[in-house]
Image 1: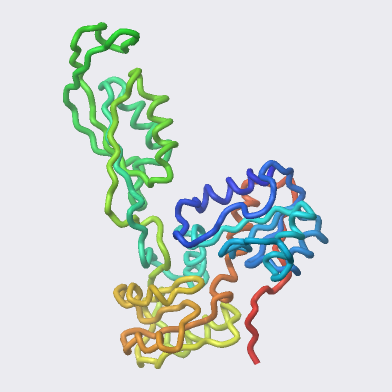
Image 2: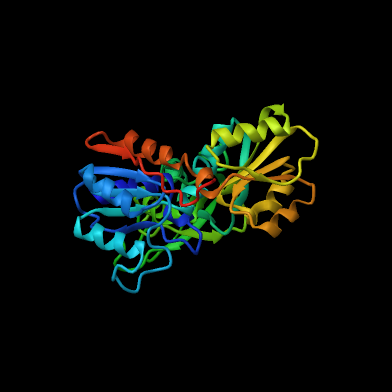
Length: 364
């Protein structure tokens, strides 16, 4: 098992293509072909975490926050990121981060928060856009089923909780095979008309190459005809934040105390209570103040996230309760996600969760 194998396992769950443009997720330090002796999971990479990995015989760290975010121009040890990168290189420790990509999948950071709270009827708070494609391919009638199934197996045709979704139209296609061809049907230098099915499926852009390879392998023609169109639809299968309902309404004070205990928050900063029961909850792991309008639009009674600034609390305008539980606290269960992803796939080496609390914020 190599470093790259671990990267592939995580990215199958949370594709890098789902990262926000500002992010720097992926393998940041190390050789992708190096054999794995052990993996240490952490929220952040600090010198203490790196020492822990070395002490426990782990030559790979999987973290949520990237060690290298804004880029490194030198390795002189002038800050912790530089010291960690240099020490990791000296000790052959690979460092990998899954950040906004694991924030963006349904079962990712916000999804795990919602699960811990017990929310039902969950949906993405701000869905991804400009990530969907439509593929239309023309296949002879007798082979349409094989081509269609190949597209489904490659991940195309999934809409919400439905899979194997396609639209099919029968018609006639024409072509003339030129010199140097070996036509599946028809003769060279003669116009041929063939009964065909136009198969349309939707797919996320990051699966395009995989789906096209599957199409070409399954299609009987030497030159398969297909079209790809960008879609402007929101993709409800990925995005930032979650909104959902509580199975039973809760009093505001009781709910705030529950989430404080659940997320081990030193303090919960919140706006004025509204004197209403909490029925619908919106949340976003990490720094989620930008999604307050989405939380209000979802008709949530409370919005749970981190890193709200003073003036941003005024934006609640008594339409919703803002509950800031802290950035680290909102993401603390991310380590569980990494552990489950990796251990479900492999059992040939140790996967450990870091004992180091990397939260830089303390409460008096």
